[in-house]
Length: 107
Length: 116
Image (spheres, chains in turn green, red):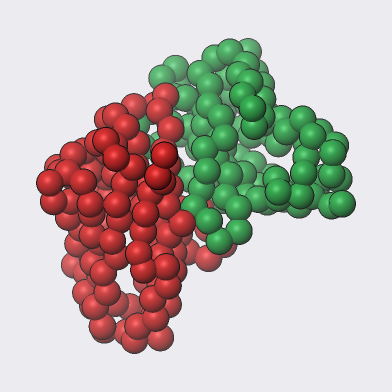
């Protein structure tokens, strides 16, 4: 399974943009890039996914490098409710989680 | 739309006892997954069902863990006998199709198991 590398933790202030990086240098052409987040005491929640082009939805934006070896999840205005562990996952069939990035948001 | 339902929410047992977890996926979802999440780690896939057939159980410790999905809807995960290292949150997830790369998974809130 293709591997991803994420920082263990990041911090942000409320209402500021947050850029969560993910490196995936061994990505294959059929791997989708998925982002999930896990709030305390809850199961993971889907955030966004993409294959080659940048993607936007109501929760976030996903910027994918041209060579697809890295991607960035963008939260445009962080809120306290965005404090969670964010997982970047490469997926062809199975969803294999790493340890993710713990995002802290300060008021 | 109702989400993935799991029960119980918490369970405390002693080692060598048996325990079972139940999952009801989102209506119409053909694919069901069980994950194990140990404190401080990401979820680890234990087993994947497509309707009532097993697609992948390569990470399931089959000497003590078993799972079934009767009639392609609800699923149960059993541990018999439990060990201390089985203490974790057991998460159930479902998706609408066959597990291909572009679809998203919906997770339940999990069952937190403590083995004493």
